[in-house]
Length: 501
Image (cartoon, rainbow, N blue to C red):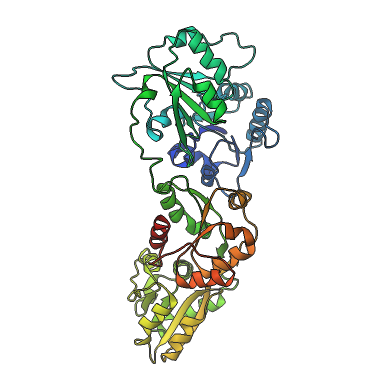
């Protein structure tokens, strides 16, 4: 039992993160991460999984081979117990499933001895994920009716060792975990036990990750394949008739952007939609915000404009951010009925959709989603009228100038601040400086300028995907070539440009 006091609430959660794809985290796992004060995670856990944790939560990687010190199991146990006793909620985040070759029994034993209540949250284990992501089923009506999960790396001094003769005659599928460095030992054991050298083998590296690879071979040749192709962990190896069958499907590695790296540079709160769309298309996506969005330094000008909002005939939004910050500020003081007599204009469909989320309809959306088109669409309708522009702390003055030229009385209010991010995440910097080609999405001139300062020369190594001619022009001013430009100035258009490029 997790606790000797049934009424107690768990202080430690042993959570399975799955084999790599962050989408395979369970709902319960996400709930536990959201309440954690401390997250202790394996290096094989996808960093995107950590986005479910609060920004203020402490996140500690327990180390990886060849990259600093690895915490011992004793140290992990002590850290969990000390944090729990200090009143902190701890998530011990494990790759795969906590109870499948993940040493959870040792951690549970330590927690029980310390009388620390805990909960085990299962995760998708790699053996099962392989069936879906690599098209190598672990069972099949005509091929295998049983599965054995086998460690390829046994603990020294263990009393009960693997009986390879018994495994060699196992009437089903064998799945070896952690067998990359010991392949000669376990493959030799199966051969010595009588398993035919022609037995089919599928080696799946980084299952469910954007660089997943599957190598098919035989038991007699698998050790040489590991050696000549320098196959390194994380790897699972499936042995048996199922490994020689026709793959179920190529839906995962066959996606149009599989194997391509894409860096999304939008602010964190706006990056998720583009990130998830690109991920669904198979891309290995990094999120590196180039700018940060926040409330204005002084709300007073906004509040004064809202007090006399009925004096305006038009309220014009040049971004979805502007909608969010202005309407939320209005709702703190009043409600959207204050806008009943004001006509609303939006620069594009995303901005119009942001208004719709507050049950507001944009009366005017231009055919092209940029300031020039919005100004042209409004020019014939605003002469002699008062127009309020809700804008960022920086940006072009074109819209205000064009509307004034059309005879409008224009006031502008800064409803949100846009600030540059000055330092790139080390993983993003490494991706840009590496040999693997990288796409970088650039969705505004402000982002283009920030990237030029933050990344500099390494940005020239990337393939730049620009959302509009204005953004392209800004990139060119800094000396960068643009690989593709969206024909429609939206995220959908940007994705289509990348697919075509």
